[in-house]
Amino acid sequence: MSDRVQAPRGTFDVLPQDEPARAALEREARRTLGGAGYQRLETPIFEATELFARGVGEATDIVRKEMYTFDDGGGRSVTLRPEGTAPVCRAYVEHGMHKLAQPVKLWYLGPFFRREAPQKGRYREFFQVGAEALGSDEPAVDAELIVLLADLLQTLQVRARLRISSLGTPETRAQYREALIAYLRAHERELGTDVRERIDLNPLRAFDSTHPGTRAVMELAPRLFDALDDADREHFDAVTAMLDDAGVEWKLDTTLVRGLDYYTRTVFEFESPDLGAQSGVGGGGRYDRLVEQLGGPPTPACGWAAGIERMLLSAEPVEERAQVDLFVAYAKPQYAREALRLATVVRRGGLHAEVELAGRSLKGQLKQADRVGARYVALLGDEGTQLKDMHSGEQHAIDPGAVADAVRRERPVA
Ligand code: AMP
Image (cartoon, rainbow, N blue to C red):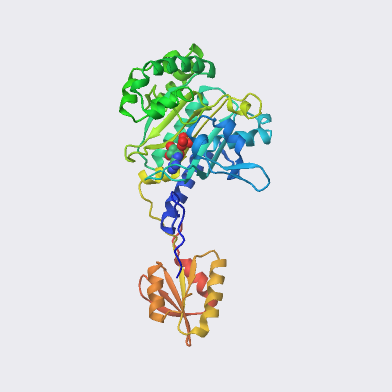
């Protein structure tokens, strides 16, 4: 035997036993978001690299070192999507959605890719569910989106705390950035190397540092929140008032910086105390300039993304198994063909049926029927067909054409 081929580091298989919980999560997302008028949009797994360079920001960790970028063979640079907001904005512009009634409310669920150091809850291919509302700057948009994520997390029984802040406008941010750079320069020697080297490139990231010296410096650093203009402050107050109305608890965190450049005004994050180091379950914010930055018309917008694996790690486990109505067994190999024919008829009648596929002994087949949880077994043999009730153990002769109806009669209403 040659060496075993393994899945790449930081990736995972979704095994059959993991699938019911994922399917349940997707169902809940569809129910919660669909119920609020959000429609599903799926964008390609790879996009032009420029979309993320321009959208997410050249100075961000994601663009600088985490993207899977390659030549598509025709001299064009493409990238496996590291996030969903820039692609949604691209699709919004490309399909002229700005001509529809605004806001356009969309949701998505699929795989994303970042070359991060793998650990529990952090993978190189992971899944996100996201929601975006484009075309309105009303605070109700931010509040609605946050409430929907809070409700989704609650339905999935994910415990999570909400931190929220505002980043204001790019102009306020530019002024604040200068003030922060000056402050960091004044404390340069106390900072970690990583932060020191990137003071000019991305000073806001200093708030995310785990370096003790940097953390101490950042405790007293000037806060963007204190520099917000009146309109941004009003927007923030309106959003949080609506969260109060909905009974969603929140906490102002003026150190909240998200790893993407496109945010304006509202930013928020849900964190779960059950998750350890990778505690972020979902987050997002407003990105009023992004659509324009990608070549579209000026379009205020807001959205979030939540990690499926992190939600599942902190959610209540889901036990779910499709009910098997019938297992078709046979006493001799020459009945294999008739067995498959019977299973097919029963399946086409809308029932769940399995058939022996491994040439087991009759005893082995009954064991298998038991293992898959079959309610009935149809047994084909020299004496015709028998139908065995696996609950009572009762067995009687039956015409093969009557099996489906007999099983259906006993089927509990779903
Ligand atoms: P972000 O786009 O970075 O705001 O991420 C949104 C959410 O996606 C996070 O709160 C996580 O739940 C999830 N997420 C982000 N990166 C990863 C990763 N590398 N592995 C697993 N989940 C992730």
